[in-house]
Length: 115
Image (cartoon, rainbow, N blue to C red; front, side, top):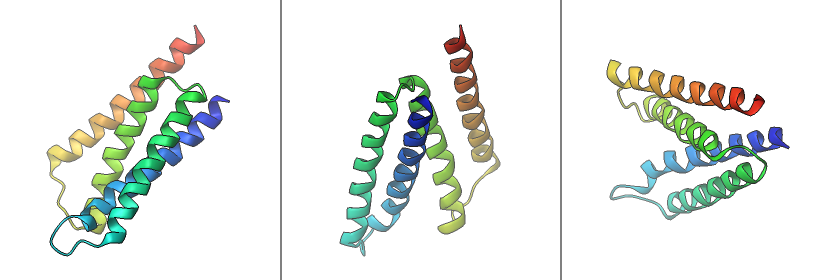
C-alpha cells in the first residue's frame, strides 16, 4: 500500500511541475486560455494525488517535503532549460540544500517507521 502512495506522490509532483511551468505561459500580456486550463487541471490533479498519497499511508510531513522540495528543484531546472532563466551559485546551493533536506526527512521517516 505504501508503495502505491509513493507512486501517487510521483504523479502529484509531475502534475504540480507541469502546472507551475505553465504559469509562465499564463502570465503576461499574450497569455492563452489553454495555459490557464493546464494550470488549473494540473493543480487540481496534484492536490488530488497528494491526498491519495496520504490515504495510502505516506506520512504528511514526508509527503509534503518530497512534493514541495522535488517540485521546487525540478521547476528551477525547467526554468533554466526551457525559459533560459539564469541560476546563480546561491540558487544551485539552495537547490542542493533542499534536496539534502528532503533526503534527510525521508531517511529519518524510514528509521522512525521501523522502530
